[in-house]
Structure formats: structure tokens, C-alpha cells
Length: 508
Image (cartoon, rainbow, N blue to C red):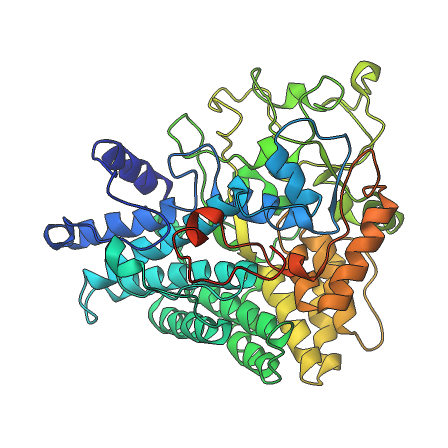
């Protein structure tokens, strides 16, 4: 998969893409001459996957979507130093985002570029041909629409390639209709993909990914704002056929998931990255870590000599990590640097010790002998979007939601036991699942959406407590308390200024 993406980028750089815009699917005038063989269809499919990487820019989609636009707005991260640059990042964290925020535009446009490419592949192939490639394209389109609808609410539902004039009349489609299309696309993917692509197809979406994503969609629909009373049963139905088959991809140790030598072993679906200055590296480590000063860059010997970091100095919530450490939770030991700076031989370096620890290092390849990494956004570690714990915890949540809580307990405890903490006893609740998800996915962009789907009251109260505990709403840090508007992001100014008949999300 990584080699195919490299080949795609070589081809892309050799041709002009000036006529392609990212906000809407746009007609590629050469498409009628392109998809004439399976090789060409596969190249087009690789192009869709490549949109999830850096896509010719500095930043990949996980950085944009899961760190900046979601984790940054959750109760997992706080600002450890007063922001003095990269104001768009700080505005998101401080709940002061505006319609012209560059990260908001980048996320919205990148997701629609995935949809554009998927629509083009689907329109340029026959329904009874290339079913595997069409199923993957539909999975990726469903993925993009899922991220769009839960981040921005009502969004245009576009299912065919459009020219710019054809795109202009499109309005915002109601959420329920968008979810209906997501479900339809995922059901086709479930029926037409292998369970779990491996070998030369590692990194491609499979039926297990489609089923897990579908369960995630249904669990989201069960909560705010749709509050669909029947959605939890549908999530149970989506996962029941595979839930007992996933154990072989459940990593025995939490740290194994983020081990570069075990890539494509434990995930169900991930964004693929590769170092070597080919434009395929990850930018995640450059943003998830602290600021760029000598006292905040806590691991210079773990990385290549030219390592720098981007943006603000974010740290993991002290209260959360303290609670996890009190239980000897392994998830607070590997992916978080818990006691300031340590060198590889565990000798504390007092010259670069920091007062505010709990730095996320989940995606950092800690190898000072690595001479393949060429820049701050050239890291090789894949970013898991779905893994087995997703399926286990979504299944547990759905079982509780349909009144079968006792059946949920073993699935929650599989995750807890791997983390080295005591299993739950008694009857679990959805609050137990949400607490487990928060710890399992620190830095992976899931907590914000979990807060949203628990409803406005939980969302606002949780974030207010978090901001107060970390002294964020003050003259020093200048954050604002979130309001109901922060349940969604604004439609980007660059888009709504063209579509003047659209209503902006409330409060922006």
C-alpha cells in the first residue's frame, strides 16, 4: 500500500492538478480515457487513500482532524504555556474558533476531496465490475461523510462528480439523510470486501473495518443530536457476526499497537505513512508534543538531529493521568511521558527537565539511529483509525444500550485487563464505557465526539470542569468556556461566502 501511494504521488507530481478544487467533487476531463484497466482503477483508488496522508501539504488528515479539530477540543489536552504563535491552533483549544480558521477549512476541504475522488472512481467504473475497488471507494466516502456530519452537522450530500457550476446550487443536506447514505455505502462495503486485507493489500479497508465503522455510526446516531432509539440494536447486529473473530488482531500489549515493527498487525483500519522525504510521512509527532524551546522539547536524542516541533505546547490532562497512574494503568506509562524528561538510559537530564509533564508521545518513533526520517513531518508510524478495542467497546456500549449490560462486561474487561488494571465487577454502564474509551484513545481524536454524543449538558459540564482544573480560563491563558455552539464547528468562510444562501451553524 505504501509503495502504491509513492507511485501515485510520482504520477501526480508529473501532471497538473490545477483544475481540481477540494470543496466539491469536480469533473476530471480526462476520466473517460483513464479507467480502462484494473491497474488504472487501482491507481485511482490509491489516490483516494493518499488524501488521508499529507496530500502535497505539510499536514496529514489525522493531524488536522483528530488532533487539531477534535482532541484539541476535548478534556484530554490543555495548554501548558501561553500561546504566542500559531493562533489558529490556540483559538481551537480556547473555544474561540472563527469561520476563517485555517484548520477548519483544511479539514472540511480534505474530506470533500476524498469524496470527490471516490465519486470519480465510482462514476468511471461499471457497477458489475471492479467490485472490490468500488467497495473500498464507498467505504472511504462513508468515512469522509461520517467525519463531516458529526463535525459540521448538515453538509452537502454529493454522490456524483460535479463541475463548479453544477456544485454551486447544492445546499446543506439534513443529518439524517447523510447518515442514511453512510449506512448504505458501508453495507455495500461489508458485502463486497474481504474480512481483513493483509500481505500486499495491508492498509486497505476490509469488511471488518466496514462493520466496525458501521457500529461506530450507529452508536453515534444513538446519542445526541439524533437520539435514535433503535440505533444501538443495529450496532449490535453489525458487530455480532465478527466480534469473536477479532481476537487475533487484539494486541497482547498496549505498546505493541504503536510499535513501528508491528505495523498492520493489530489495527483494523489505519492511515499509512512512510518516511524518506517522499511526501508520505506523518506530521502527528510534530504537533502532539510540546513547544520548541529547549525546556519543552523533551526527547531530542530520540529523533533525528534536525527535529523541531510545531505550534503550541499541549499536555495531557493532569487529573486523568494521575488517576491512571494510581491504578498502574499501562496506557499512562507508554504513550505519555509522565515524569518530565528522561533519556534512553533513564538518566534524568536536569538541564531540560520540565515542570508540567504528561506529554503525549504515542506516534513518536524513538530511535536516534534512524537516518530515513528527513523532517518534522516525515514520521513513518501509521495512525490507527479503527482497532479491535473500538469493536469491543462499541459492542459493549450497544449491548448496554439495548438492556444486555451483563453481556457487555467481558468486552470491557478485555480492554482493562490488557491495560494492567482490575476488571470491572457488577453491571457496567455506558459511563463505564465512556471512561474506558477516554483512557484507551488519548490523543486519537475520539474523546471530543464521545462528549458530544452524551449531550449538551455532559459536554459543557465536563469541559468546564477540565478548563477550571487546568486554569485555562484566566487572563494568562485566555480561554473561553464552551457554549452550545461548540458542539459543531463553523462552515468555513471560504465555502459559505460562495454559498450565500446557506445558514451558518448557530453561534458563528
